[in-house]
Image 1 (cartoon, rainbow, N blue to C red):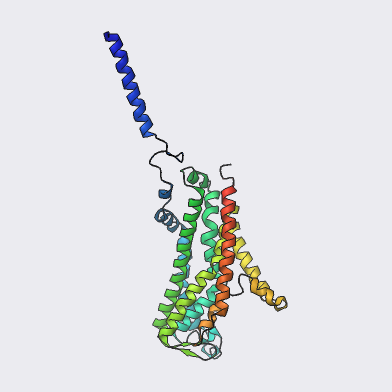
Image 2 (cartoon, one colour; image 1 turned 30 degrees about the vertical axis):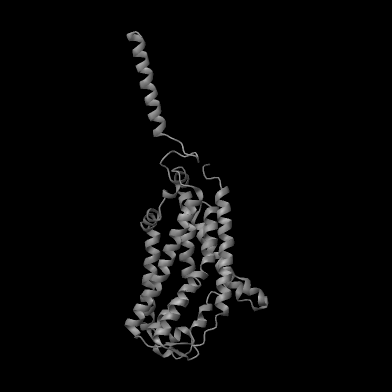
Length: 308
């Protein structure tokens, strides 16, 4: 073999070696992805949680939940003491720290907590779409269902932390200002402090379960629109409409099918003999609505044209 022929063979070997190395660097896996890519590693919860915590609306929402008990305390202290002789929850709010925490929970159930949950779930995807960053997240690439799941998980964490923050601050403020007495119900029953704390904890868990329906609805609206305000406002509007319909006694038993009908069923915990019937129905109703709305959100997000 001549020197020129040996040089050509060497060049071919070098080119073949470079081609093999290049193919190894860009090897394609069985699912069509590049070697080294793992869908389960995209958009970790800690990353998405950090992104959401840096947003002003998150800090404002959590901050207001922490400040609300102090505002209620101020309202009671500057109010007329002579008006506290009745048997409503507001009248009994200053009887003990537990009563104050329970009143704070009741005062926040039908609107404030609904708004907060709708904000976290309704804004999460719609805001990305409005900023035109959603298509870049999917091009990262983050699988659609993983992106939706991670955002829903982070929204649930934020909403759950907000609820716990409200209850914890309300209980702390109440115990500091009104003491650790018994939990007095509107019927005059007195629940011992340890049992009262347990009842408050169970009420918080029940309320978290109840709010899943608004979370599912807000998530569905969030993937259906590019306007965050529309998603959040739509969920709140449905809740308000349900509350209005629930006040119409002419509807009879049909009201039990409304998602807000059992919103304050945890009131049954404010007695020594607890009736779990209403809370059981309320939990089942909320989870049924949440499942239906979440399924709609998944279907809509899978079929939505995001790249246009």
